[in-house]
Image 1 (cartoon, rainbow, N blue to C red):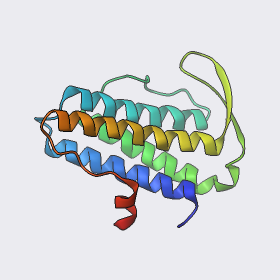
Image 2: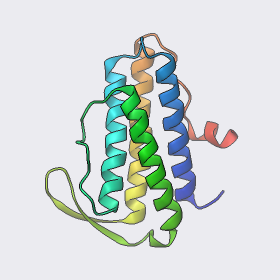
Image 3: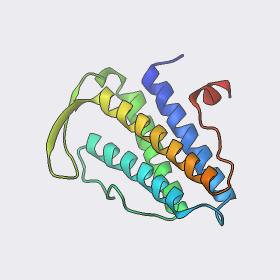
Length: 150
C-alpha cells in the first residue's frame, strides 16, 4: 500500500465516481435526499480544498445542485485534491489556519483535514445507500475493500 493518505484519496475519488455513475443510471428514480447528500459531499470537498488553498469557497455547506453540477464539482475537487495529496505529502503535520462557515477560527494539521474530508464522504455515501435501499433501489458497494480488490 502506498502512503495511507494517497490511498484514502484514491478510494474517496473512486467511490464518488462510482456513486455518481450509479445515480446517473437511475436518475429518474433517485430520491431527492440522495442528491441533497451528494451535493453536500461535493460542497464539503470544495470548501476544504479552497480552505487549504487559502481561498474563499464558491459553495455553501448545504447548497443543492443538479447531478451534472455535482459531477463537475467532483471533477474539480478531484483534480485539486490529487495535486494536494501528491504534492504536499511532506506537509502532513503542518498546521493549517482556517475559518469555518460560522466565521470561527481553527487550526488543524493538513493530514487531519484530509482524513476528515475522506471520512466525511464515506459517512454520507452510507446515508445515500440507506436512502436508496429505503426507496427500492439497489445501492452500489463503495466499501474500501471493494476498491482495493479492483
